[in-house]
Image 1 (cartoon, rainbow, N blue to C red):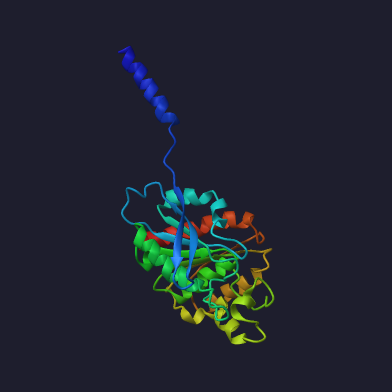
Image 2 (image 1 turned 180 degrees about the vertical axis):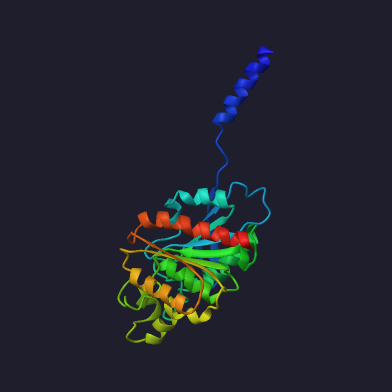
Length: 272
């Protein structure tokens, strides 16, 4: 009996100190036919991925000057993948693509890449819910613009979209962040700027066509344009969650903001 007792104690100690199952983080490489190049992405899988059948996917877009590794510095993402049983995809959107198919430079076709090529590759290679009800997209700054831009234009692909500190109206910033390199100068191609800024794309929406969450800090240089977007959505009777609180355009804000975004996306997935 004492040997059984010793074995029980030893087994309990081993189980106590075994590492718990946790989300898996991979770096993958895809190929963009539209741009004829390889592009990397970070993917985060929930701990139960191997046992599950189909998982919803959230695409997380980075900001200007960053790359696919930007979001991997946020510890909450692995926790969220496990808690919400979702796959997170953090693609490389180029240093300053703004997620356009650029009319100025044919080498920049990140709208096609993210909304078509990457989504199809992820659905082909992983156990995903292959419908708009199982896909959401969000991002910060340039990526906040990109997430809304792509979702507005591809409502057959994404069912929910979010923005954190998003450049949702970039017309007040004609000389910033390489936007002119993607669209041409505002003074020379005003129609491109007018047609491709998110705040002027609300005509693409109908009430309830997309689940939307928008977030921006009160000290952010994009705060005013986000307030304007919020007002215009209300005017058009477009349901959306709008969050604002003290904070600036930095990772302190986004580390907190992404928690609300992923909770929102999980609730969207749970309704479908």
